[in-house]
Each structure stands twice: as C-alpha cells, then as structure tokens.
Image 1 (cartoon, one colour):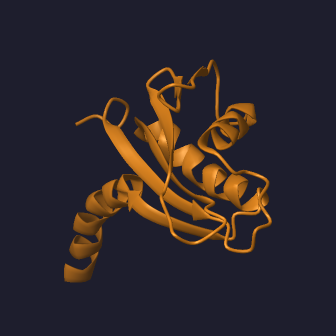
Image 2: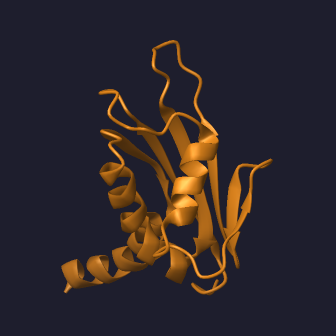
Length: 129
C-alpha cells in the first residue's frame, strides 16, 4: 500500500453558531474553496455535484439539515492521496476558521489513523527495549 496512491478521507463538520459567516449555501462555500489558491493546481468545479476535483483530489460540500436557524452547517468531504491530503488538511481547517465558522469538528481523519498505524509498532518496539 503506497502512500502516494492510497486514497484517504478527511471530513469536517463546519457550523456558524454565532451567525458571523457570510456563507449561506453549498455553492457559496464551494466557490470559496475554489478561490483558495493554496489548495489547488488545476481545479475543476462541478456545481451540479457540489465538488471540486484537482487531479486525484476531490472536495465535496453538503449542507446539513437542521431545525436551528440560521442553518449554516456544512459537511466537507475531502479525498486525496496521502502526500496531498496530509499537507492540506490543516490549511482547510484554518481557512474555514478565517471564514467565521466558529465550530469545526473533524469527523474522519484517515491521515492521522494512517500515521498512528505506522508509528505504533515503532513505539511498541521502543517500549520493549
């Protein structure tokens, strides 16, 4: 399993409980992500599927239904190879925070899981010495 070719997932739940964010729809958030040049090399935005694709990396935005108004809760799913995603995941969180999303929850982080799986045998070996 090569780190360069394995697809990993990273999912964030972003919500604005303080009503400070100007983002109110999936399209708004999708175009905001598209405008963040540090993430992309040659992105393609698909409004119908609410995705951005750049090579093997994909970012998808979904609005989460809520009874609480204003409903500014979004699920962001990012898929990419290890090298790309490991580098970009903190940038994604920082970027959302600068857009006034005050609650950010990492729901899936296969990068950290991948790192932990590789490190655990080394830690175990060190503890046994």
